[in-house]
Amino acid sequence: MKSSLAALLLFFASSAPSTAPAAEAPLLQSNDRVALVGNTFIERSRHSGHLEAALSLAAGPEISGLVFRNLGWSGDSVLGDARSYFGPPAEGRERLKNVLSEMAPTVLIVSYGTGEAMSVEQGWTEEPGATSRSAAGLEESLALFRESYAALLAEMKAAAGPQLREVVLLSPTPLENLGDPLPDQTENNRRLGVFRDTIRELASSQNARFVDLFAALGGDSFVGTIAAPPLTDNGIHFTDAGYAIVAGELAKGLGYTPSRPDLAALATLRAAIIEKDRLFFHRWRPANETYLFLFRKHEQGQNAKEIPLFDPLIAAQEARVNEARTAALDGKRGQ
Image (cartoon, rainbow, N blue to C red; front, side):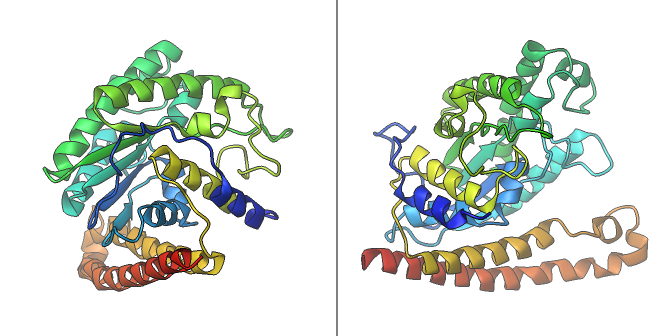
């Protein structure tokens, strides 16, 4: 994006008020294991590293040993539709529970609602018995979304284990109107606002934190155009500079005060995060999973033993992330 540096500086200089209650304790503690769960917004964030960088730096130098794992899955719903390869959505939910059980996170940051809000007329799930409800209009789709999200949270909490300390629910982000030939997103933004309200209510009922990215990025105006130049490449998916803006709003929404780091140190940290996330992606989502573990494993299943070999590579890269984080924090203290 041609003005990514300007947008990045805007992110660190921004001083919009936090959506988190002032009395809330800081989210992150030393040695936290943070699982990022959600749809395309979460999965694609691994390509920029901004979300993890912003949170880890905002936590401050007194917090150490942070581990982040991106468990996003593009196109996913609260019922797990995209995570299932060949079976019903329940297969996708089981996949998510398995990886959460292995990871044993202390913090869950969860983001759903965009695809569901945009698909209330045609349906957004293949869950047996639920498809007709998600295609029956806004009210019925919204009720199914809330019911299914609550059930998913219960399943994730149980899978994560007793050490899980915090759950954070993110609102969807608003969509941008970029003009022809792309569609006008005004009506989708209206529905996203309704889904945002439902997620806020769900967070309250679950004693979870809530971050209103929809409001922070201007969604309540329903204009749809958030920045000039735009922060998305198609009205929906964020550019690198767009993720920088969102990362700042996420940190502030959790009660942190983002500050301006040395840009070179930040770039080094983000590069280390991106490589760590790349290695982890291939560890938990190998491209040839059908051959390694599923119904074609009789052909190449002997290679499944190579997948755990990613673990020492990830551990080594995690050490580089921590070194880069320390350097970035040291640079901030020297300013």
